Figure 1: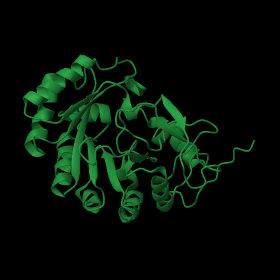
Figure 2: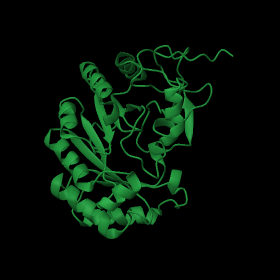
Figure 3: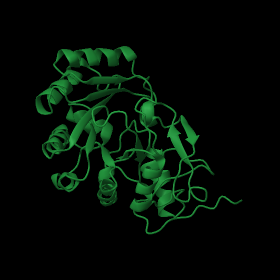
Length: 297
């Protein structure tokens, strides 16, 4: 996110669930993979429910200016997002909704006036990519959701993770650039990110940096003015998390947090992606009460 309150920091959170099953997902072991969901069903999840009040208090105490719903698909836990947004706004915090935008008009209508920013993926302009790589969806539904969000007054920024051999061809990337220019505006930000091997796409090499740079140049020539490339893992990193202490309600008894070791976007939020036995924090947005973790032994 580059064009909404630049220089500010956000607290990033995620919960269980996603309406996609991307074959290159970095987060499945935390949010929708078999092991994670089985642990949740058995009541063995290394997770703690964080109420909206606790979350907003944590953001204020951490000195951030916003809260980002990310890592999984926030539409799956929409009611929690709405509760947090309503409270955050009364405390002067903005909210960022990171999504695949395969959502209903009704859901977007519920978010309008509550979230400040939509950061949405445009993974490809080909339906076949969404069917084969994401497991479902179609391009038109995704693009419709993004454009509707902007028409509802939500600040929109888009991103594309460029995967070698799957969505990195010039024609596809130019179609994305043209769509952004024609439907969101020539100054609408587009973030082009580097793919790293993961899950069923672990056999694919990382995206060559020259591919990212070429895509950016093509987008600029197509008329976009705000195109950004990211050659490191950034905040989507699933393996290089450095532990960092944050001020959270009762964190000495319950919480320890991880911060992304990269600094590309200034994310100072809680990273709910990597568990260790005594370094864990996550939340189950469907839980009824706080699950206290006992690390005494």
